[in-house]
Length: 207
Image (cartoon, rainbow, N blue to C red; front, side, top):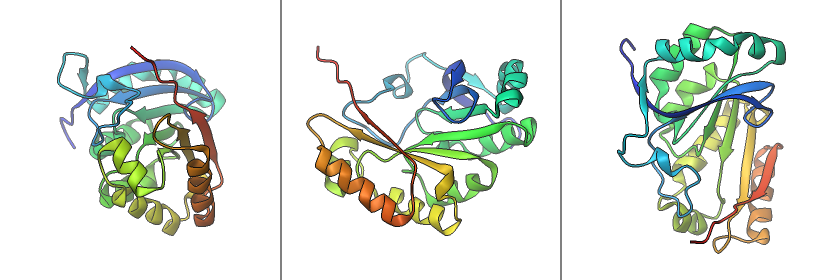
């Protein structure tokens, strides 16, 4: 894990209850396995000079300025992106540096190998999971990928008893899914034991 570097496209401080409990700092990784039609964070894709390279040590030095806020509010660092679960070694090393006092949260699509999630589950507190839609055809049409890995990782989370540590984001995406589709996704996830949901509608800008 020495000399572990990652491309970071942004660091946003003092976020309150939007990316986990308490005050959090959002750290967004470059790189994503999906090609969503309406990417909400397009700077996470491509190789333009919109990122900086950090090691876990240099990132820790950058964010520890807010350590007292994290401790006082049960907050911490939320890794997003892009796809943070592509950076398992980096996040593990960061956890070693900050210890157990800070919350570490992940904003993830879960569309990564099961081994990645198995590695991260013991060291993170909350997963904010962007499901898009449980219907495989809607998912493929919107993201360009199938959702097999997503379903496998949901089963892993259930097996480990971590459903209550997950917030499931279910968007209404204009021209891709409907309220009926979203209700079906929620019902399927509730059957699996997930209870925390964030429902919202994508605001699509027309050019």
